Amino acid sequence: MMRVSMIAALGAGLLLVSACGGKGDDKLGDQAHDALENKADAMDAAAGQMGGTDKALMEAKAKTTRAAADAKEEAIDDADVNADAMSDAQKNAVINGN
Image 1: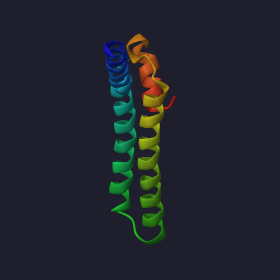
Image 2 (image 1 turned 135 degrees about the vertical axis):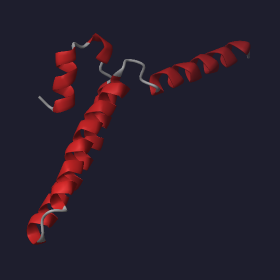
Image 3 (image 1 turned 180 degrees about the horizontal axis):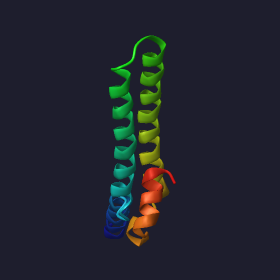
Image 4 (image 1 turned 180 degrees about the vertical axis):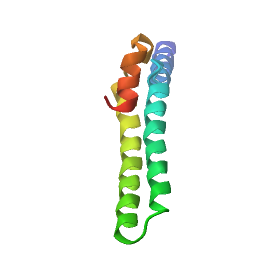
């Protein structure tokens, strides 16, 4: 019985460690998300200066960019990249989509 409890505790511990990432990808994903959110904010600001169809198109583009920000952050996190092992140039390429 003690062995089963130890195995269950070990499994739970491994699950917790895997859930938190731990390779620096959370910060990288957040930075990529923030970069796209900033672009979407600029689009919303530009839309405020427009009217009619142009305004609607710019707002739709901002909405699509926000969805892309969420998707990119999740993809980086799911990839479980070791951001600590990446150079600054590599990190910037991921963040800025280059």
